Structures are given as structure tokens and as C-alpha cells.
Length: 169
Image (cartoon, rainbow, N blue to C red; front, side):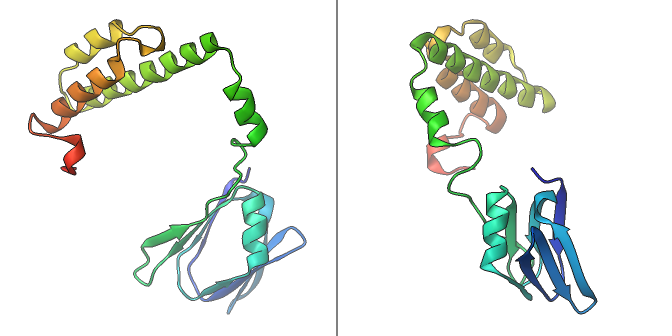
């Protein structure tokens, strides 16, 4: 995993050679180890990037973001096989025993509800109703606290007329 965020702002050619990203600009040539790059932002439409470099960045799980002529993000690379989504890992997760799945689902729902309470607190809004639901959370969310608290959360945050399915936000 890289640690550098690289931003390209001028006319340049980006290529790959010997585990390095090679950057050719009017000012000269620079090289950056591909393994050091966490994210590459191409902040100009005046850059050329080789497919060899894109492939190597993808292998290293490096995000590449491209902008349009207004310098607004327009697209980014997305790997087919990210490091945390290998098929073997998914198969293991599918084969977990039911108790483990239920415990993990309960933890996920609990974290979502706690995050909702934190957001309401940030905005100085009451959390009493959601805290009550949180205390009633059961294993595997058998009583559907996730849906109940979401309804209360969005109403508290956006008002009584808010409807999540009508595109009001």
C-alpha cells in the first residue's frame, strides 16, 4: 500500500518502467516508485498516460482519478479484484457458521445506530428515541431495530416531511 498522493497539474506523459512511474514534463523527467503511490490525481486534460502504467497502478491498488476541462473529477479507476475481495475470502465468509454471521450482523447494526446517534448529537438533535431502540437491539436484529431507527433518524435529521424514496435529498 502506497503512502504518496501524486497530483499531475501540467502537460505531461506518464509511463511505466522498472517499477517506476516516469513523468515527462517540460521541466524534465521525474520517477516515482509505483509501490509508493496511494493515489494519482490527473488534474489536467493535457496528460497522456500509458496503459502499462494504469495496469501497474491497478495491481498495487492505487486509485487514479481523472478530471474534465473544468478540473472537476469525472472518473476513477476501479479494480476488478481488490485486495479485500478475493474469491477465497468470500467463500470462507459464506461458509461461516450461523452464530458467527448473526453476531457480526448485530455488531454492524449496532455500529450503524451508534453512528446515527453521533450525527444527531453533532447537530444538537435529540437521540432519546434512537437510544431506546439501540438498547432493544437483539441478536441478528430480530426485532428490526435497524429499520426502526433509520426511520426515526432521517425524520429527526431532515424533518417530518422527509421521504427517503422520493429523492428529497
